[in-house]
Length: 90
View 1 (cartoon, helix red, strand yellow):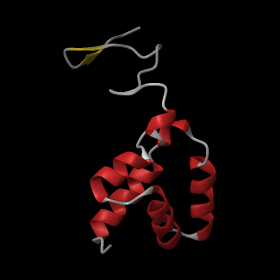
View 2 (cartoon, one colour; view 1 turned 90 degrees about the horizontal axis):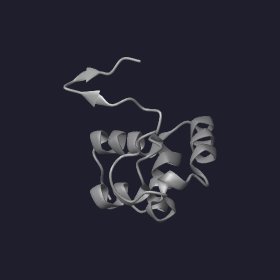
View 3 (cartoon, one colour; view 1 turned 90 degrees about the vertical axis):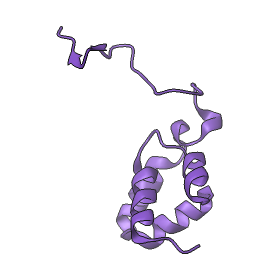
């Protein structure tokens, strides 16, 4: 698959994000998890790739089937509500 520089950058960015699943990357770019791993290996420095692999392996949020929630965004129970674009004060 021929990807533009911008597409590669976006895939790498999405792969680093904790809550972006491999399924989301596959849906947008047609790359399976193994393809993303291969892309990361070729586009990153060896130490950066190792750090990423260590971070991603076993992370439940990177796979839709392992997530505790299905839709919407994760929200911490301690997170404050935002009302009318003003952050609530403590």
